[in-house]
Image 1 (cartoon, rainbow, N blue to C red):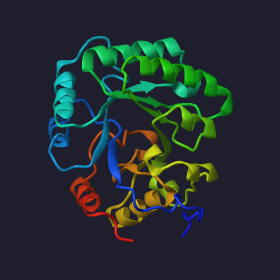
Image 2: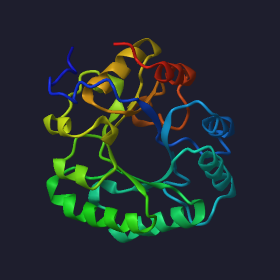
Image 3: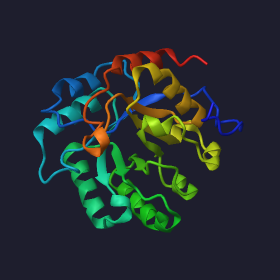
Image 4: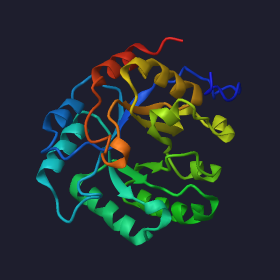
Length: 249
């Protein structure tokens, strides 16, 4: 099995309850039923990302405000998406967007998407995260690297997205050795193009690699021309049911 990379206790743990992250549905006007469905009881949701217009937009959107409020009332954590542009975007712009998310939508934290992963950018990311935490006492910060970053990033984030991409790559992926030093609650995997018939295998890979927050979808990026996260997977109810029962070993 290609994804068994270590026998260290913790890396192959299957005791932690796996939950779902929703990385960025289409606007509530385009996907009203899906946003409403997220607020239904029963789904083990760890967080849902709110992305109005590649960020918070230039003014409050009443439809997004209603959708976010419905989720918060249901006990679901809502995160505002900030595009870090892999370190090319100034911290001031990120913080401005974060303030808008906090003021307009009362978000519970932030996903710093396209976060750099190299050691040289770590001090800047640390400063940005420290500022984001001043906007809300209990802000939940997720760093969206999309790959395993330099280990020091783990000390700044509540969670890190250490895989974001296609199933064809995920099924052969490996967890970094250092990740075994941290609990599964610290890691998220976002995978598109997962066939229904491979859903059980995908869940096992996440568990063996030590990621307790996942999002798997059968939607694809169509060669880079589509956003696979905009619509819910066709097997959403199946995922919720499997996580509710636990994944057999």
